[in-house]
Image 1: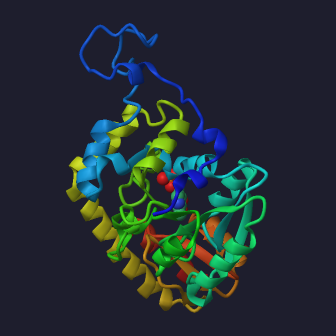
Image 2: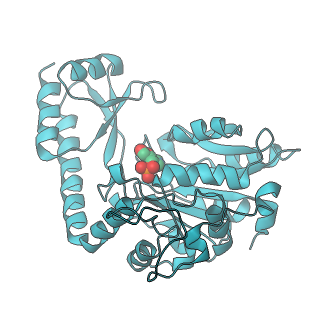
Image 3: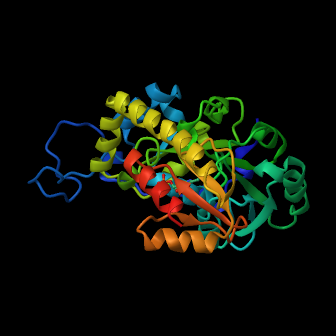
Length: 343
Ligand SMILES: Cc1ncc(COP(=O)(O)O)c(C=O)c1O
């Protein structure tokens, strides 16, 4: 086990967090005159700051102890909080594995944390040696405090193998962003958080659960890490409406399974159809709900699709001549294929 105190920013280690009215009295019955709330209405009370009912449901669903769960306003909030808990602005750095989800770099820039990029290998696999060497090399005054791995990776779509090797060998935090993990049968690293106290696994209700508008993300980690995320987060970071949306979704797990099945069937449909279209040069293997497609000319294909009201993501700036296509509904996918065939 690692000494977590070495990874946490000094000012955060000694931080006295805000104590909300609901921190000081957490009972549900009573005459509540302590939070300057309005006595009238349905949404007049502040939500549970620790989302206990939702966490109970997540705990059963994911087989993770409630004390090892953090709920954020989307997983983007969780990633941001990790920067703020672990990385000293202007001093420390974080390693990301390029090409990957663009928000890591943006959040690093907002927090004034340097980003070091290690290129993914052929097939978008992790270059474990290069990552660990980079972490060792940059161990001067500021340190590499965190390695962020996106698995399945956005935009390439592949699940990352051997992440545990990084967790074991890196003297710092490994944050594994599993936003798309529900779309694959490959294992989540959440089952490893008891073995590795420097591992944080984030997941989300935005993708396979279909709740992007509700902004609910979750992190699984050692209790001490969860306690520091709780210290730094805004007191009521997930609204009651959004907590309830996630609770309802979990209570209706058949709907989740059904939609996921359709999306995965549609992914196969899209891949088969795309392979028959001459402008498609390559389709990268995907463990997610999107596919990275190499075409003859990404800008032209992107623009022509847009002219026909089909919006995909042009990823040419990160992977040469590639577009990223999200798997849509059967009707949306048919429309995409119809338009592509009409070029
Ligand atoms: C890899 C990855 N992580 C996180 C997110 C953001 O997730 P959330 O909606 O939970 O903030 C996205 C959104 O596209 C993503 O692609």
